[in-house]
Amino acid sequence: MRQRPTPRLVRRIAQPVALASAAIVVLAGCSGGGKADGGSGKARGDKNSEPPSIVVEPGSANAKVPVSRKVTVRAQGGSLSSVEVTSPGPGALSGTWSKGKSVWTSTTPLAPGATYTVKVNGKASGGSNLNKTASFTTEAPKNPVVGEYFPDKGTTVGVAMPVSITFNKPIHDKAAIERKLHVTASPAVEGAWSWMKDRNGKDRIDYRPEKYWKPGTDVTLRMDLAGVNAGGGVYGTQQRVVNFTIGDAVTNTVDVNKKTMTVAKNGRLLRTLKVSSGKKGFETWNGTMVVLSKVPTIRMNSRTVGIFGSEAYNLGSVKWDVQLTPSGTYVHAAPWNAGKFGVVNGSHGCIGMSTADAKWFYEQVHLGDPVTVVHSVDTVAVNNGYGDWNVGWEAWKKGSALD
Image (cartoon, rainbow, N blue to C red; front, top):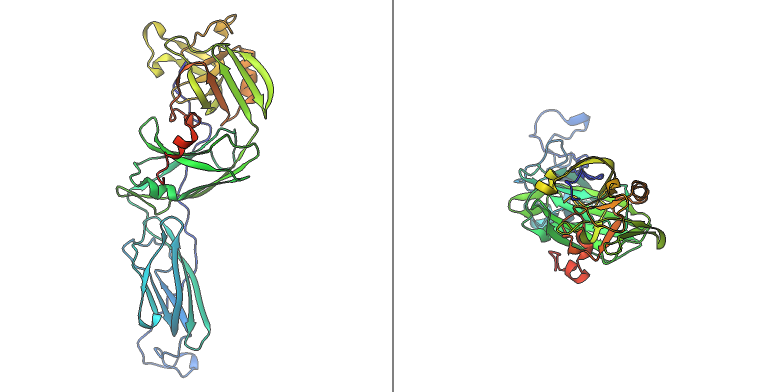
């Protein structure tokens, strides 16, 4: 029976990264006069009183830099040969040179909420090398966009788990965001991003390979979104590296005609279980769903999924609950169907088992394991949990904003 979902086991909203610090000394000349400094005999302001150096403005400071500022790099007592000002999110700044290349001034506007690194090389007038590395962070955006991502860092998940990011604000420039999202895997595998709306109408992007991940694969998501212009006046804030691992291939197939579920692990059949599924008008979703969460006990009330009248139910202490969709599809114990397994499909969409079988199944599966239903009707929607695997590979790739 379909039931309002419980919170996923793995959930975290990333926060912006902290400022990387680097010490910057900004040198300024003083008006002359007075005694010589340190008994050197050289008056303040004498061009020979200070050694050649590179000055970067703005320099590192606790205060965040307004985006209206320009970046200025000066070679005192020499000239500049190269200036690079970059941020992982918005990228590199362009700039112009003064005559003699003693000053470089940025021309690209700064992005909000971004950390920039400045790398400078030059030559002193006497021929010695000058170099400097500095960093600064701009003020946070007034209208930030944040992505809630799954799975979480350091987790082990099933072979069907996609990388999924749901944003708290509309993404008008999807290509700009997608360019700054990168997934790598070891062993390497081809994968693709695809955009969709989640069940609440929020912009969401998922990444998956053509086929399930291989067990033991190490996957890394890199989010270089800090300072990225998402359009509509909103900017990204996140700079994240998220590593997770693919566990055993626990694959599960429900045949609603045979009223059975086969459970296999790494290609070896473990058990065939008797099950019930949705009755007419409440058929269990067809296609592949992915385990979202597990709870040992839950209350199932039909009001939470809009079922009233003669079909209403309110069941307390339903045992061994494995959630497959946010719309309320679970695999769970259904002792009230005792004697009917393999005979009657009588639920409101859930997959029922004996209490003993449900407990065994609960102990076998984990977040990200696939449950595929065959010979039913109405294939589960791509955004109803992780229905990603019900979209053909070519169609999936067309969901990218970069194609």
